[in-house]
Length: 170
Image (cartoon, rainbow, N blue to C red; front, side, top):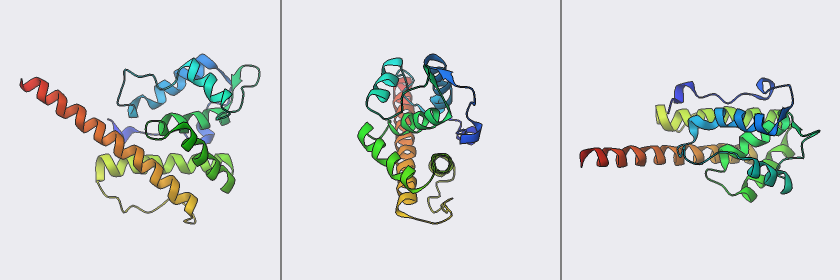
């Protein structure tokens, strides 16, 4: 994992031009592939995207196109679904967007996710300060959520390396 290079685009860095479903899938696949340990499994498929809309995880596209708000939701879902159920993800998103605007909530998620990846994969220092201006239950839930994802990715990577080493030594 190239953790030092890992960056989740902030809300103002997301494409401003609405994207069709296939463009959304390609965009997210390229973005999340760095932290998707199981490269065999697709992070997002057309069926998954349709289900997210049906289950109201993501609002329906306008004229079959998805905007930056859709992308922000989908990025969060794609990162978190490696650890949490869809229902838990929806609850976590709702808690966050009830406490602040979507762009602020999303940018905070991005910053904390990057810090968690750095702490788990590089520094191994878990006492880093929160990037929240005020620590709240909601901000601590985001920190804990992204730390859970980072730890799972770390364990998966280590197990993959151990299994590879065992296979090579036999």
